[in-house]
Image 1 (cartoon, rainbow, N blue to C red):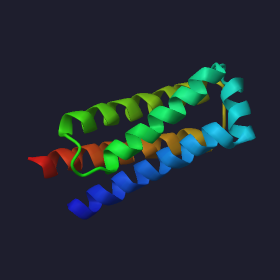
Image 2: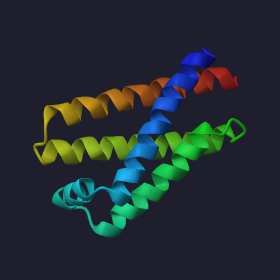
Image 3: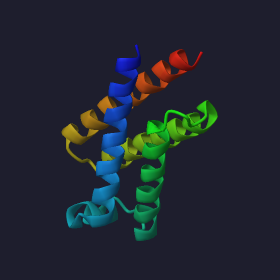
Length: 117
């Protein structure tokens, strides 16, 4: 059970770190976020929040309440990203990828709740 928790949490954190990096340094990602209609300050804000969430999820001693806020924030981000990409009529690959990430996030959260009991 713990191995599945750490695998799902590791995948989630790796995605968040990679995504934050691209939000800050990838010209294609920066242009893509602008094309979705989001302001530039929001891109930087999301990158910082993703880094914080990834760190919180990976710290074993972080309180369950703080981790729940991180899960909620990441879930909200993924849901918002799904809706934005759907509205923008982006590739089905992006939408499926986001649904898979949402599923992995849910697995990580459910396993965390089982482990913490």
